[in-house]
Image (cartoon, rainbow, N blue to C red; front, side, top):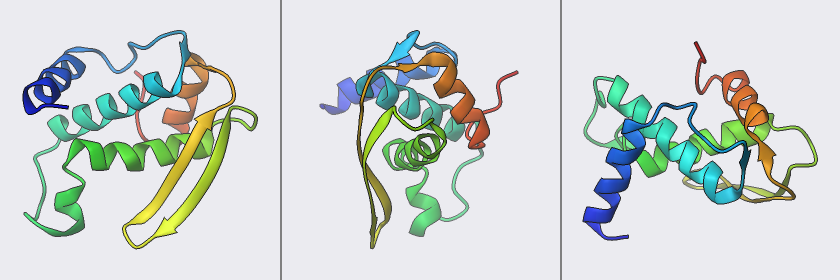
Amino acid sequence: MADQETEELRLALLAEPLSEMPEELSVADFERFTLKVALHAIRADDGPTTADGIQGLLYRPEVLALAIKEKIIDKLPDGYVTGERHRGLGGPDHVYSFTRPVPRALVMTAAEDSGVVEWT
């Protein structure tokens, strides 16, 4: 994705409330949701405490979105997600797919149960 397209997507996601998502999420919808959560989290924080290292990497939206995806996937009920979890040098990584669309309510509950968001 070109830099301008990436920036436009980021701005669009920041303009949306976190709870705005389809009633049923495909993998693409879920990826979009986790990137939106990452962008909102970074905007709400003061920024990294260090310019390098792991803390600095987490302030890249795509990297933070990976960690968010893992946390939410771990909380989704059995039967919705298939895939593998790999422990690599850079940390855990999920290779996953959905067996069927995941209801919005389940994603919201899993996001809250994992500590990723607080719905108010």
